[in-house]
Image 1: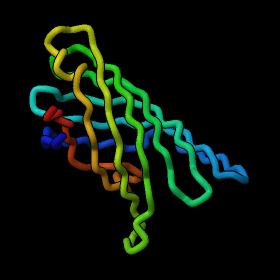
Image 2: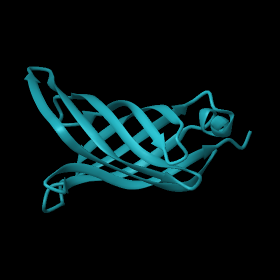
Image 3: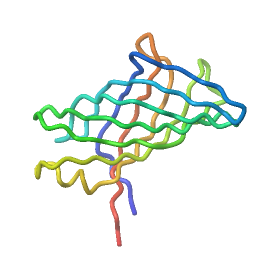
Length: 143
């Protein structure tokens, strides 16, 4: 398998960012908006994140949302991964790696229904909130 760079994604927490601690970690809920630009596939993202916080400080983001394309059709998506603290960064930041799947019944987007995407994101303060930004890759099978 190889990774093919296809674009960029940016997401910012907008309405809620709440952490509920538990002895074995915690739970975080947030609402995010942003943009996804992968060439012909581009538009506005709206998502919720129901992330688990492990006791070691690692977050497990679990986003579910909608990408409204500039052409009109909406694609549903999932985004799951790992978010770790960068111990050297000042100000604090997180390094986030996620896998993304998309789906829509419109035949123009069939290639995205059959693609697995990976995002390598930097998380930190953005626009008076917290967000992530970084490149987006498509996993291309070489079997």
